[in-house]
Structure formats: structure tokens, C-alpha cells
Amino acid sequence: MKKSVLISEVAEKTGLSRTDTELVVNSMLDTIVDCLKNREAVSFLGFGSFEPVKKNAREIYIPGTTTKVKVAAKYGVRFKPGKTLKKQIQG
Image (tube, rainbow, N blue to C red; front, side, top):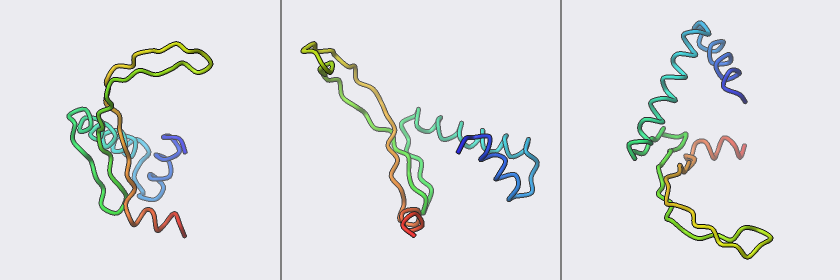
């Protein structure tokens, strides 16, 4: 599902205008990104949580060669689904 489809479906379910819904969705996503940038976890009870994770610097091999390349340390994001979400997906 694309973001535009999500906005349309939420607008239809809530009765809000598409413009208002787009503002709400964009604001929510911006807030989540800001929290993750500040190394804060974001959790939605029953849905799941987003957590910033530090990945250490390491050396990797380029596939098909014996060349090693250094990869710098960086932060990534881990999503852990909640119990309610897992149950709903399983049926």
C-alpha cells in the first residue's frame, strides 16, 4: 500500500477531508522520524514498536571477489510487532 492510498482510506473511514488526513499522517510520520533521530523508541500498544539500533563498523567481502570493504558504524531501525498485530495477521 502506498502512502496516498493509506491517506485516502483513512479519510474515507474517518470522514475527514483528504487534505486534513494527509496533514495528520504526515505529522505522525514526521514525529516518529524525529523520535528515532533522537534515539528514542516509539511504541504503539498492540501494534508494535520502532527502535533505533546501532550497527557497529565492520568489514565485508564483496560477493564474487576477495575484496574487503569497510562499512562505517550507523544507526538503523528495528520494528517489533505487538501481540495483537501478530494475532490478527495469523487469523
